[in-house]
Length: 64
Image 1 (cartoon, rainbow, N blue to C red):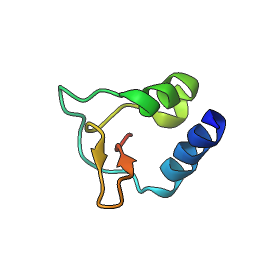
Image 2: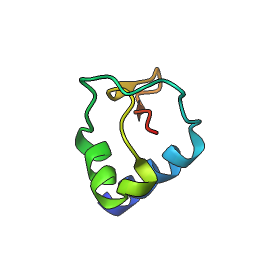
Image 3: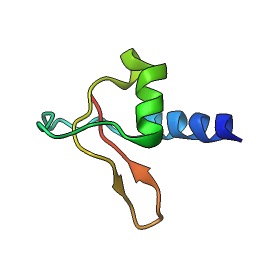
Image 4: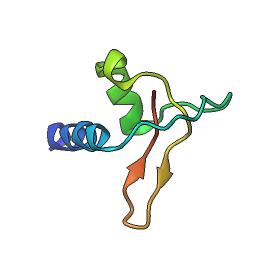
């Protein structure tokens, strides 16, 4: 079950466009995003903002 969740986050990250914004001083990875960053640091890159929740309840976090 956890594997599907992580795979879903990875797939979602591949579909989101990269943001041109610069990293804020207080951004950090949390929860599932922190797991992804530890597993795939080169693919994920650095955080650009903190995680936010969309209207559908999905969490998103922009990275480099």
